[in-house]
Length: 154
View 1 (cartoon, one colour):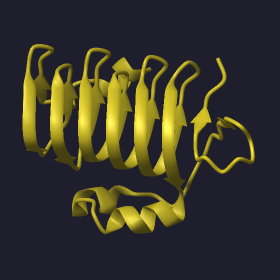
View 2: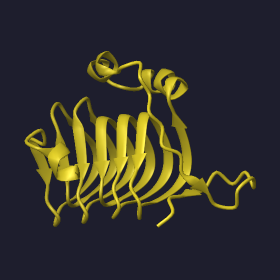
View 3: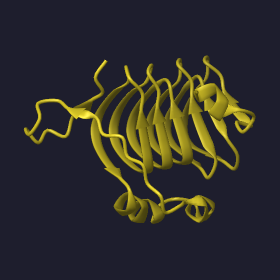
């Protein structure tokens, strides 16, 4: 599924032997197979390959993760694929987690997340947002303990 979404929209590729520290801004899509420490900002797509790692803040229209993320994510749509490990805070209009993926952190999804994300997202992303929201729900670890950790059953 991730390969179909990636398509040809990733005009910039960060190879597996590349480490970038700082802020990365791209107009179109970005594919990350290496490591980025810092911020990523785009109105387009970010595709994080299986060997990719991002530590920091991500603002994107669409984020598809197959690798590792540690940090804050603000996106119109986030897809966490089976091979991904995500630790951090997520604010998204839509949030999908595939079976086998690991997610540890806090999630804000839907209209309230949309309002919060609008304050930070590029104007082009805000214009593309729609009013419909689909939210798959994960099973909480230690249900009712308030630790904010969730795991998708495998």
